[in-house]
Image (cartoon, rainbow, N blue to C red; front, top):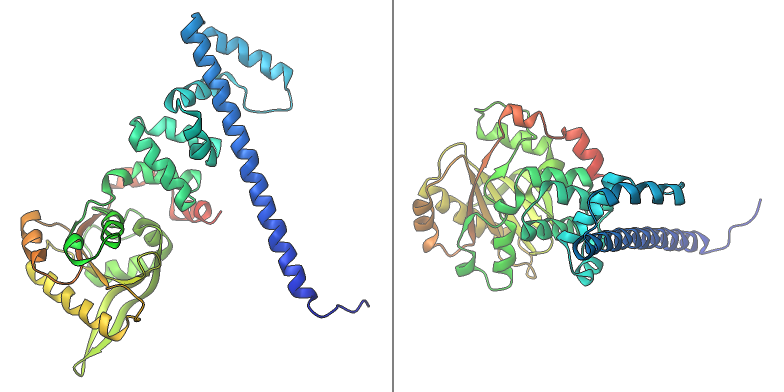
Length: 333
């Protein structure tokens, strides 16, 4: 039996990491070149049709000829050539294609063309998909849940209570409404019941919250003045470098909810916050809220607070979405 020299295991681990990273870089490079190839083909088709009056039937002929010339390559079907043309039409600048959408697999770009017609919204989803590493199904799921129009829509006092750029990051982070379509709960459920369901589906809940949230605990205990208090849900956000306290309410927002959250944040900052952490943030999730009442409640509050709503989608719409198992399989890729 060969004697393993000292330090070999560390050396092997380093080699495995290096090979794995090289494989990932190679895969990204191959994908980038493929997407750029498709964009250039689409650009040239578009140019010929616009400048020389080639009709739509040229795509049928081109698909046949390319498939005959490259029988071992997929992707030259008539349908895919039309996507290439649409891709070049959607992104006329090659530099933007190289820097942004070429980082996405072709399947992601096809879904963006299919599902998102507004150019600014399409670019937003492309960037978010790159930033969060969304799989194709997760990307479609976020589009169907209208994340673009929910992101940064909560009512907050972050501009008055947090310094920039943290206030900007925090404002962008909080959505309204939050969609809990993955829960197996009835339409009417007590706060503890919703909390339990969210914890049971914590992976889906974290995906709905967004990138950077780390789950700390539910019914997290705090001892203040010889009395015990429990936080519904406690998270830590790794980019904001702060605790995030979530208080669940099954009713419409009331002003006293802000006072209670202000107390929780003071306790968390005193008992849990590390000296290098930023001030803790509170998120009150309600079934409904009146904007004017919320704004009055947050106006003179010194702690950073946000108020947002949550809902579930109608049953017939939920059935058309990926199941939690499908999302977990996709999200774990």
